[in-house]
Image (cartoon, rainbow, N blue to C red):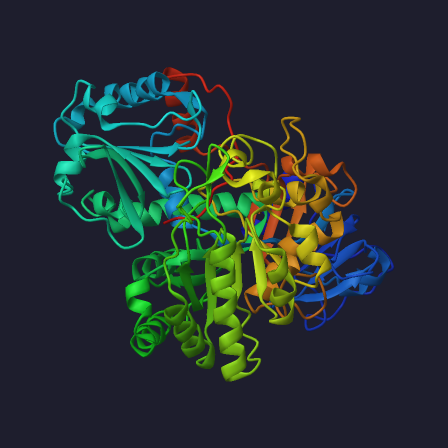
Length: 613
């Protein structure tokens, strides 16, 4: 710890002091701070509170005081480390209320299509480059390709087929996974290894796309993807620990101090415990245990499973459990169209028979939520379509009526489309909305893959952040990484601008939040979601010193420039977990090089579909 402090002082050009300024009394060890950050701007995140100049951190990792430099001089002791901020901004660390850190770390080492809009020949050229780079895996090693833009295959409306992958000069099984994690494109060898034939029924919550003769085409949707994934040799535990270590390094280097793993299980918990044992769990981590519809059908049994999960993994610093995650539906964009809608998808401008897929019926989800709510568990529901939102909201209201207000802070995640009549209900039921507003921008996902299939009226209501806020709904934030390339400052920026940094037009700019609302949403708002607002989310005496020193003043710069923010120092509970500029992870550099050897990206997109199905 001492070495870390001294290293950051050198890196930032600050001076460590062992004796205070001449004429200033030295505080006693019991009153003195472990660290004082001074000569800067301290954005506390407290409403209507002006910025301070300095912050003192106690030896227990909690904030002792926030104020002027002169006021905090009395906190200096003979062994206090003083960090000169040189006018820089310190603020509460970012809180990511919906992320997949282990999958994100592992995905860094997978060949990637970088979510680019590409023709089929361009995609095949990248797959070919990946095959050529791994010839030692012939003939049976799986080739996995990540971040395929399934909605952006050019020309628009192109539907992929296994024959294009089958034509490659290899016997290897090939799995091309979409960025939204709700679609996959595989070759015939992969289908055969998974046992998928003409006679294989669609699994609950999934679709095997078939041709006119009923033969699988190689395109899989939602839980049908799992039929193939479950036969791919899994990563070793050591691989997972390495991946998570890399991901948590990225989190710290970006200024993220708290996360919620949105699809946790026992293996994830063991990985997090291994990181904690090695001093690498650099962010407070809340685990949301994923519950499938068939398990939720027996609420008492699944509650016992959840309680046992929490019992097995309690007692680890910075690690907690108490959240159940459910997928109410899929994604709304073409070609998946598995989000559950109140009105059908359109075909050639006319209503079709497709309303999407609702993975939980009302009776099952209501009984499940009521049982968990009574036992003190929080439910976090993936809800994209307005029918999925309404069904989950109905369940939350049933639980509230049955059990009273138990302050479990049930959450609707994503909320791409919500019926206007349900917004006031969300506020009255004290339900939280965890939004990923880096998707709020004009691009292929929000226009080409959406507008023709839902119409202008519904497309005009997507990601209605400002409307929700005005109705009194508490907003929280998250990245859903690895659905997008990792940048937790992107949603902070685009919650305000509603535009991508490439200069494209804003998406429904009237739904933009104020700068203060966006900053609060991604700090205190998400701390509230995770029941730790008494510990973090603002910089106040008595709270944990979870903070970030940024390379720019995000309270004053142009909102679009917030997207480029970097962390110079990140602290969790008074411990420095990152210092200095963030390096480019080698895996990202290698992945970019592979993409360059294949096909150039016509246009790279930030994702607007979501989940991790």
